[in-house]
Image: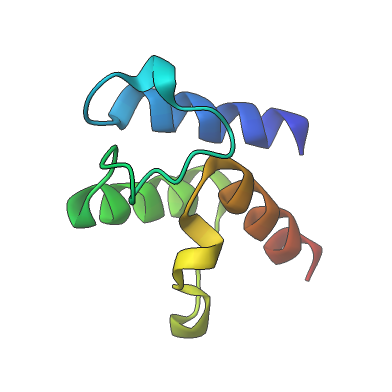
Length: 81
């Protein structure tokens, strides 16, 4: 999962609005304005392509995508299924 988290971190930093160096693993990327709804769609597309993730409607909640840590944790749970 360490490699996956690094890929997620790199994606977030490369696609964030504003000063991406301020984004730490626990920063709320949507609340802080680094990502918007289009960014969310881009993030989901990245996860689908990179990790073969196909989230259900029930998975598309803030808690799963609000930070790098949250995305990584969600991905780990998804892949463990």
